[in-house]
Image 1: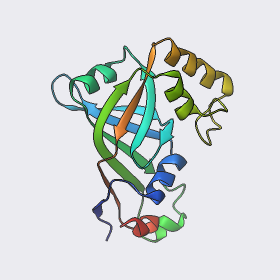
Image 2: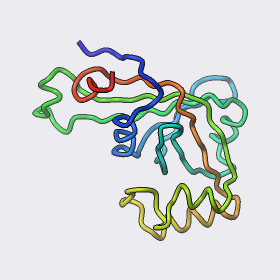
Image 3: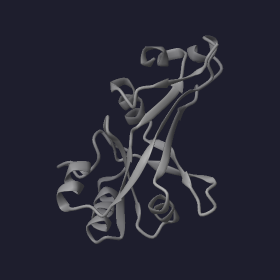
Length: 166
């Protein structure tokens, strides 16, 4: 039977899982303290933090500045009923990483650190270079910020390929 198991903050296999699935949901707390989720795209993933960029005036920034508790959920759904994972008894792989968020108006060095010399995050091919340039311009002019979610605890699905992470 598959069960959620606590893991150390993040390891190499979890980092690769997050890099493989850059479209995630960022959860934080709204003004009432209730959880609220935002679809996001990671721009960097390390063993210490998951990094996003968003507009400074977005509600999620206000929520995270008020209460920095955050959780990032990445899921991978089987492509079809014939998927080997379904036959093995698991329907989805998932990873939840929780920690504290830091909202940062980045310096030029921080922007280069996240986006690299090529102007796009490591391995990113789905975002056109022109769009990445636009995002970096908005980071430089202060309209966008970086959000670092510190990796303090992770939980994943035991089963399928996640067995090696436990």
